[in-house]
Length: 104
Length: 104
Image 1 (tube, rainbow over the protein chains, first blue to last red):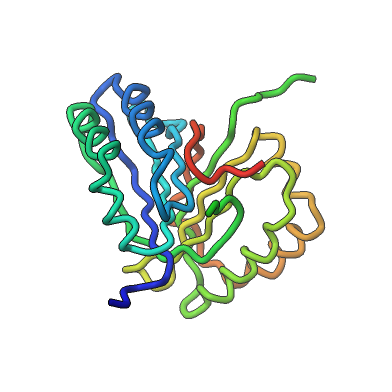
Image 2: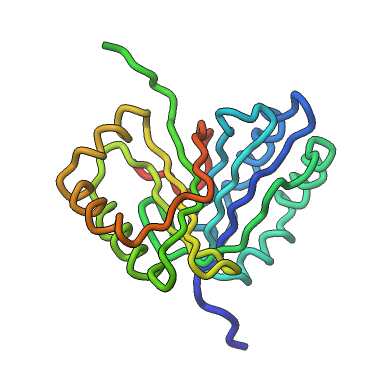
């Protein structure tokens, strides 16, 4: 069935409901430990914007990213995270080229 | 002398001079293979903005990041990259919390 075999990435600025950033980050971190095809998933607090998280994702391909959204742990995390999310300030699709820290 | 021991990160949208994105990315990728304290350095093309690269960096602490700027390979890369760079559209300091793909 082919499919796109180039790496697939996302860089997003995720805004938590006021005061909920730490709780939201904890959910994201615990739910992303066993996702097939996930080469990187970095969760970082914005230093100057107290409700903002930056998420950088690298997947071996777009299919792996789509499939991850059906994993029970991920579905459960999305359910728990949703009430803590105000929205995405930005959410950009990327083609990762490489670098340090891409596991497999 | 102490110093901050929390992880240090950057998420930046780097704009290449028109048509120079691939050349700029190649310099970034070749110069970032041996930087002490660098836990992640992901270079990714913006899918919708043909001259833009997204750089996600994770360092064990801010001192390691500062020290990297003095490494001969990094100084050489900066010299070669500078003429290819139009500017940073954004450049945000972060406190990485964890995730997949942080090497050490």
